[in-house]
Each structure stands twice: as structure tokens, then as C-alpha cells.
Length: 408
Image (cartoon, rainbow, N blue to C red):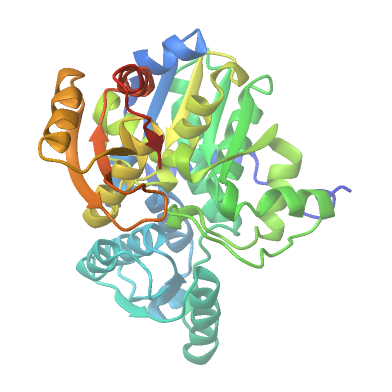
């Protein structure tokens, strides 16, 4: 079913006009080559580092474009927004630079560093509700009650045009680009990038990437109208959006070549990859494009540009995600081994592991499980390994030494 007919799309000229407005306001973020990704894809792969943008994400582009185009009377009434964090910061900074008061509604679950940064830019950040949808309801109600102008996080032509300036920079920095891969929640960024890229290079493939547990576009595209998700559960809070807007759905239907999804494990591995190999701090939402390339590198014709859309990650979450990513990458191994209940049995097992260069992180003893025969104990060992091959080597060597390791 077509969803584009009644909705006018943002044009390449609209994006170019936004670029002129943003000149001197936003950073022209770098395009960094990734040799490690290029080896997997079989051709050049570049990372568009919007995590190095002002406020730590691309959101300042759309927020500033939208607020700058308000009338002086509208700006005097103030602006209001709803966000899990990145749009909040973009609106807060843009409003401050344009002389408008800003109120931002954020879910109770919003990362504390994003809340603090939003307030640091001068906005009145108010927490409430469990999801971004709840925050949007509160923001729309506030706008109706106070006369403030609601700055939608994605479903407005000015916001889409502003975000699309990322696409213009990609074309200028990588003129021979064949595929652009874009992290996608509500769809403002991928809509703008597609509008910019397709206007100049209709042959370039634009791929939207969503978290599998918060992917609203597939069902909405199939239905021909926004279909809200009934539940979302993802570490990528920045792209956890229950439904696209009418405008972004029309852009994705008309301009985007493919929508792909990535798992939580894919996101964790990609975040760890960016830290280790690209030396980039990226939040889970911002790494979705990289995750898609890592998960299925042969699906993307090079040269590839993956947009790294944001880097505002809570340090506590980063620690958890890094651990999850290491487990997903085969760097952690938890196993259980039954050994005789006599002095020296545990020491012998640990010596065996030391000889295999497996780093023991923790050990536990179990004497009461029904799996044990009389005179046996079960040892649970949490190991750090060098990867899947090393993991298999450890298991094989333990089996050859007379142990029967069981992976947890």
C-alpha cells in the first residue's frame, strides 16, 4: 500500500537550504575509515561521526533548523519537546542560542547524564512516564496549556531537512559512496539523509537500521500507516520509538531502499567494536548502523558509510554493554566441571586453565546439587578468553584432560 501520495516529501533543495542556515552552527563531523570493517565488507567502509557533533548527536541539526524558522512571536512563547535525551539536548542548546525558553519532558528512565546535560544547556527538564510516548503526550499537553511551540523529535519537515544535512556532508566527503547505513528510531535522520542523497545520487542505496525489539517501521510499512508497537525492550533508548510519524513513514516508503533490524547482541558487539577498533565512544542507538554491517557484511555494497549517530552513553550502561558485548563476541566463557571432593582438585583445574591462558574471573563451589555423585563437587568457573577459537580450544583441552566441561 502506498503511503507517499498525500504527503509532500522534503526535497534536496530543502536540505540544502537547511545547510546554509546551519553553517557555522553545527560541526562538519569527520568521516573516519574503518579498516576492520572494510576487510569484512570487501571494500571501503567509513564512519560518519555524529557522536562528535555538538551535544553529542545529530539532533542539534534538526532542532536548530526548526526553532530558527519560528516567528519571533512564536519563539517568545517558548518551545517544548519530548525526548529520551539527544533531542532534548539539541532543543536545549538551539533554544539557548536563539533566545527561546525551552521545556523538555523526558521519561523517568532517561539516562542521568542526558538529563544533566539538558539542564546544563538551560532547559527545564521534567521527568515523568516510562516511555518516550508518555513524554510526548505530556509535552503536547503542556504546549496546549501554555502556548509553547512543540518541537517534534522527528515528524516535521524542518527537522527532517536539518537532519538531512548529514547526507549532504556524506556525499561531499565520500563522493563515490554506494551505500549509506543509518540508525533509525522515529525516522527523522534516515528520512532527511535519503532526501538529500537521492536528490543528488539516486543510485546510492540507503538502508535504515532498527533495534529488532523496537522496530516500528516494518509493520507500519506493510500496513501503509503508522502502527504502534505494543511493547519495546532495547538498550538503544535513542531509537526506541513506538511508531513512526506520517511524514517519516512516507519518506522511508518512498526513498529508503531497505529496513533491517539488529539484535541486542549485535548492538553490544558493535559498541565494543567501536571502542576497541575505532576508538569511538558511541551509545547503543548510535551504533545500530555499524551493528548491521558487522552482522551481515556481504549485504552492503562498498563504499559504505555507516552513520554513527550519537555518543551520549551513561557510563554505568557502558560497563554493562561492554560486558554483554564481550560475552556475545565469545570473550567470556562460563562453564561447570565436576571434580573429586578432595584436596587439590580445584587447584589442579585452575592450573589446567592457567596453562591454557584462560583468565579466571570468578570461581564457585557447589556440593548440594542433585547432579553430583557422592564424593564429587561442581566447580563453576567464569573465564575471560581471547575469542571463539580460544573458547573452543579451552573446552577441547579440558575434555582431553579428563574433565567434562558444561557451558552455562
